[in-house]
Amino acid sequence: MEPNKQPRKGLKLSAIISIVVLISVFVTIIINTIVGYQAERISLYNNTIEFNKINATDLSKMTQSLMVSMKKSIKVTADYFADVPLTDSNVLSQLDFFMDTNHYFNSIVVVDAGGTIVSTSPSHLSLIGQKLSSQAAKEALERRTPLISEPFLAITKRLIVLVSHPIYDSKGVYKGFVAGSIYLQQPNIFQNILGTQNKNKNGSYYYVVDSSGRLIYHPDSSRIAEKVDQNPVVQNLIHGVSGQQLVTNIKGVRYLAGFAKVDEVGWGIVSQTPESYIQARSNKLIKNMLVFSMPYLIVLLLLSIWLARRLSKPLYQLANAASRLSQGDESLTSIPLQPSWNYETNELTRTIAIAFDRMKQKTDELSQEAMTDPLTGLTNRRTMMAITSLWEEQGISYAFAMLDLDRFKSVNDTYGHQLGDEVLKFLAQVMMEEKRDQDFCCRYGGEEFTILMPDTTEQEAYIVAERIRERMETSISPIGRPVTLSIGISSNAEGSEDTMERLLKKADEALYAAKHAGRNRVVMYRNMEDIMSSK
Image 1 (tube, one colour):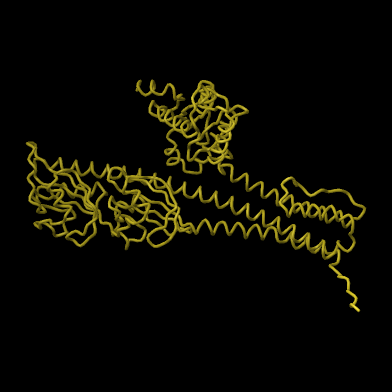
Image 2 (cartoon, rainbow, N blue to C red):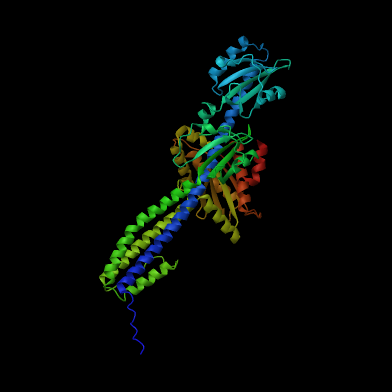
């Protein structure tokens, strides 16, 4: 005879319900964690690399201005020696005066047409009478034009950059040159202007390379003069390209880099943050979310075990909702709270609903943060592009208004970045109050803002923009006075088939025309040439 088969006992109803609740809530936590992780990582990546690009651009402008001033100061000194006999006794006092009043260089020398040093300041360098043999000196003597050398080892055994200007007398006869030296591995003007970098907690730093890819300025002074031309970012700078990108440096470390060219001398500035910083911040978000969610999970599990012993059929709807949630049913916006005769069932259902709503709220908040600018509350550039892409797919024409605060850098320099941020928020508030109901206000980056206006011509957009401009011109901003802005307008609502990229470029060109015409004005793209020609 075949032995009797023992029926499977299965799991108790309380255990089944507890497991379902645990799995459902755990899946919800995972979904929220993944969404939060991705949103935070993308936001951090874009904000960090954009900040590095802005930082590199600002530093390049500062360095550009510095080099222009250095060349001008050397030229003034060279012009002074035009008809002065080049002897130490004749020129030393002027060199000392130059060093006392200008702090660009570590030393300055006068060299005659034969390449012999006539005088130096400081005078203790003991170089008078020595003949220069460096490639930089030879080039200055041969070309007889203003030059800025690449880094080289001088006869003083210092690594220097030479800024020189020829000396011609009133008859045009070449007499030699004046040259200022910057000691790259000692305290110098770059450290004064660019700042001595302290170790940043997130690993960010910036450095300067010359036109051949050699380090001129670096937080690690031992690396100065090192060739880094194999770095992809440095290669871009050597070819005159500025921008931003993810790069692996020569040591194998991945960085989010922004880089900008210094046109005056062909140098480049790189500001970068290690990619590991983004990973660390994202991991911290996951940890915080788990810490936040875990107490709810534990409490819910214990409560469900206790209540499950007294529940039967009324738990079906709750289990069904949990199943839909675990399957990613997006139509499930909340846990149904249908009254039951059983008090314990009602409590369990309510507790799960609260946990679900809080987690959904956290997800919604993270999604909202990914779509908005955290300072002003306006939509960000990514959302702006999504809106315009949708309009183009639907065949909706629209207008672009590109807004830029006038002389905003001076606001930050004078009143500080905190009040500068308040001015940005003030402009955002004015934009939201003056726009039409169907318009979208966006922060494009820095002090630049945009307004998207559907089914709007340039003339109609001009009216909205002028209203904002007049409001800013007559309103007292957080710095205690009005701050003006310039605005450029473009539109494809009048027959053109321009894409978002083309409209944005036109609006930016119109904005440039507004700046060029004196700022504090609105310029339509179609009138831009008239504005430019009138200037």
